[in-house]
Length: 458
Image (cartoon, rainbow, N blue to C red):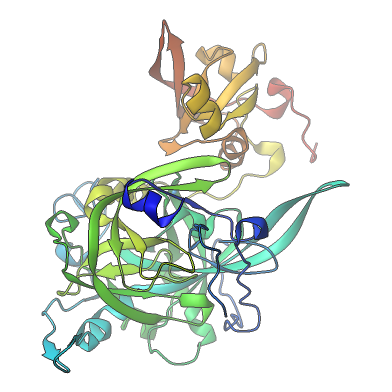
């Protein structure tokens, strides 16, 4: 897409991969620059990058090796049905001060917006995230996996009796084997006591959102005394030209600050992730959003959270085109993710199974054949959970326990957190005449033997 194309088309397409050198993408290597965590506590777990027409997603992560990086949380429902606390519900944690900063004129040609008060009050709400996972490579000799590490950002969004809850982008924590959070509470060099293991609470692939959890018992009291829960603003009230501040873990160096204005609202932006095209309407800003900033905070002049930084337009001809997820559009989704039951992966011998074989319905297949994106059921095992619940060949699984499913591999990964005998709601799309109809089924999961799966632990 050229700049002329972009001017005449509000839909911009980005790519999650920063390793596609043919398209002008490069790999960001943070292994020599980023501060590495010294110890993890117990818990669950140069040059501008592109050619003239290259577009890329700032993957929310700065990678080493070759890796880039799932109720209403606003002012009404948090803490009513569950014991999740935010500043509006009397949290024990400190509250971010929302006193507006001031604007001073530096010279006759430009204004300098003083954001120091915002930074002082809101930086304790932002954390750095490290994702240790695996990357799959295709070679002439086959497919192999390699361990990789990436960095991103997160925002402290709530708290319950046992957990501190952090919202980030799904792509920041995808494919993670281990997630660590660094509470940059003092703004100094990393303190090993502030690097703590985290677990995934819930994800929403379609909105590129995730909530992760850190056990309160693992966080030193002196850190709890300093960190703050972000104050939620109203992104629906934003105006073009309004000043904003972005805070995040740029390039994995630790938290840093950039500022700018709202350049545009409701920009329709498409990104590629795991073979899927994800399109959302985002806030456009000229505040610099660099690799590692994804999942970080976009704040208004009151220090209120109005966006989650996610995407950047990268081209040698373009500067200052970053994008953030509007917070008001996803409050209810984040609330649902916050309230999910925390799960650990189940031992393979005890895992629950549907008893199906499936294939991916990618965005390309969806567009060509008018099918919903998800896991297409190619075969149903006789007598297993899926057949008993009424799943049929040709159904497309789109949700498991409320979380979006966009591929068969994602479905299998999600099921690894459920034991045989558990009953879980599964949403399918079934062809009904010329259209697909959504159906939700409660399915009691089978054992590996019942589903015809050979467990490595048996």
